[in-house]
Length: 316
Image (cartoon, rainbow, N blue to C red):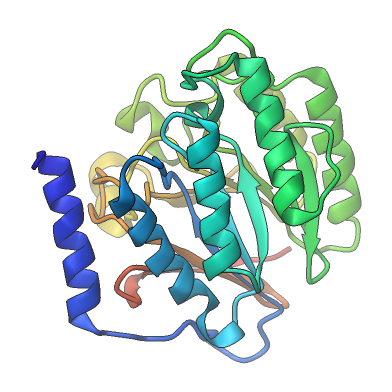
């Protein structure tokens, strides 16, 4: 058995044997929105273990009915093939049918596809999302409101790049209009994009070429920084959830505020992470309150909270 598969098998066994079930409940009273946020599930229909792990996590998210939405910030699949894409959505349909779904495309869902062109892969993503959610979006980017809070999903419009997305003028205009509307009454708005902007959350240290690229970063940041209470949620670089030690040693954190925008970078769900907690199954439970947004680290395989890694972001 390959080392990665052996590690994943051990993770699954520990998740089942530990039997430490701390259900998802709000940290405090007065929560307005509770969202489980994950990234990089990398489902491959040929490998059943990844599907078992995601099913376990989705059961954790949906148990108790306290979660309003589940977010996956890209790389749903490993190679973007139709069978794996349907396997991903079937897992959500079976194990997480209560919360709303906010699903962003990643480079593995478009750029690393082997069976069709990138243009066809992008259309397949759109069609599959619509089929499973009942949406009618015509673009790889879209927005959804959950409990009156706006989630804005960005995607890759390129037809010739494996890893660097193309975020075109139409998508930037969409982002601008959505943020203007979503934040007009002082509420926070959440932008979900698989790729981090350049330099956020230690991207340049963790993976030098692991951002959305310089040009995209400048343009996206210019839009984000026009508005208050904007949160940018990304994945892609496979860094672990980290805190004060990483901030001291390397100068970055997985939740940080720069020029008025809060950047949140998620660990990979399926594989080992760096510069922080290495385990798979990790993510954040995001809770929105009247005056703050709270991020609580959680392992959705073992149902375990990590109270040392909690971030409270005041709202303006």
